[in-house]
Length: 92
Image 1 (spheres, rainbow, N blue to C red):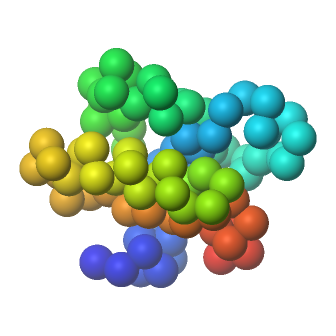
Image 2 (cartoon, rainbow, N blue to C red):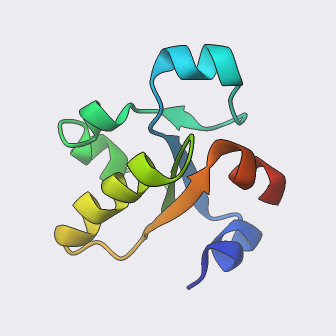
């Protein structure tokens, strides 16, 4: 399923992998859960229990891509790269 279809379905959790200081500087998307990329692996279970598809995003899409790759390598197919913060905010 394409990212746009996931966003239209409403069945997803947004996961912001930026650092907390980036949220303070650049803003955040309401309802998104902040889990910095460096914590993704150790918080794997928490992320896997989140509702619906997992849509990761960061400032540019690079770190969120790494988070998606981590879960895809574990065999997950319900993870998506939402790209950069500004880009994703424009789609919501």
